[in-house]
Image (tube, rainbow, N blue to C red; front, side):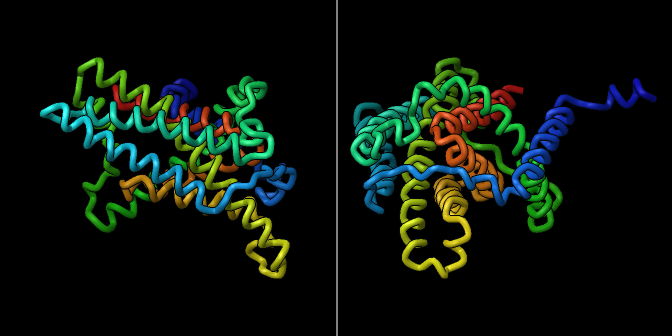
Length: 286
């Protein structure tokens, strides 16, 4: 019986069990999460409310302009072309965000959360943070699939991400390498700098100012940090066009926002995001 039980346990089961244990420990230590961010230090900045949207529009505009410009040079568009444009536009936007952070944050890039001295701690903590939220992600995916089957029939499955479809259908090595670079390295850096570094910080700063002015408003007075995490997570989620992915992306984004506030380091959510994307890309090869 022991052998049969052991043979029935998969690696996924072990990972999920470890994640549940870590999550349970966190809930017990933080009074079900209520005290989890009481020591979260604010990030002093003079960022206007519109600045994160400037970076967002630069990113989307750069993609559009590069697609138009390159389309005039070549007579075709393919998977490699689209991902190349996305990668270049993302790198250009990262450079813009770094400049905006340097001029908007009190301690420049350190105040933004980019301190090289914390990289080793963030690198070690990222797998643990992702592991703790993994069971919730699985439950969210299962519920999303179940609801989808109730609405659209028993054959419904959550659509695969477009980039993962390209990996599974295009055996060409250059395309696969470019997608891996974009998904695992470039996209996590850009999205965490934009949605956590700029949007979440801006929202938290304004909520904390409003808290001082209208402290009787319970929603703001309760915890502006968690409210800023939730709002920035909504923005992050809606930028992704596949509606079926929204529930899981929102849960993941809450984890990323929490990791940023708890550690004070932008490297922490970048590493978590990168690891998550690496796992999903690796799964597409099987």
